[in-house]
Image (cartoon, rainbow, N blue to C red; front, side):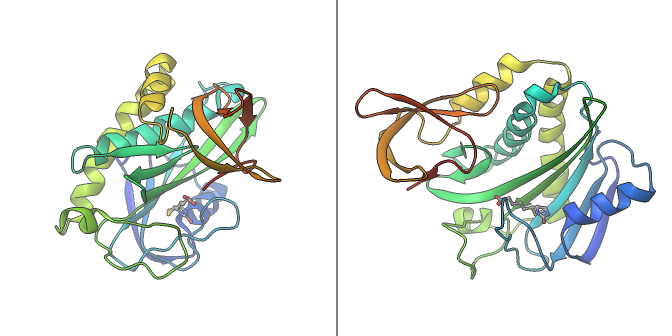
Length: 244
Ligand code: BTN
């Protein structure tokens, strides 16, 4: 069960790093969470960092062993976790969406980021460390992170982080169960329904230039399919395209 063991930490570099180090010497029950009040080197995707003021947000990592998921279906882990976070947020706010591949947005602002790091042994996933940063009570963001927003910014309320984490764990567990039971159709459909800017003409940038297009779908391997203004269909893997 996700969150049946929650290890609360004061300060770490990154909860994903901490979980990886723990796994080197300990056998951890699936679903174990490492949650930190302060990350001194919180990591985003690629080279980005993750801003989170001490004690105001959720920054945590979950240890999972998704052995049932085929390597070629890796992106379904991303879908399940993104949906767990959106299921949770939909209880509090409207206009929640998933910006491909797995940024969580409310309207045009980013409220949560997900960093999944997997290891493969003998052709199977031996583990996944699922890092989630969810902005809860922070009101002012100082880094150059594009369009951050928190639950407090949106609702003017303060939240109890321990309580919030329990509700979030239940939402994540539901979607994780779908993943390991192989309910891919539900995950695929729900992910597509919540996809940010799906079917909407917007500006994108590939490795060379800007262009206008609209998102058609996300393929099972995570490739984003976009139709251009001249009716061409183009596929992009992560980092091959940016939203403008
Ligand atoms: C992103 O760039 O959108 C991904 C951000 C992921 C941030 C979380 S916070 C908890 C975990 N530990 C980290 O160092 N990063 C992830």
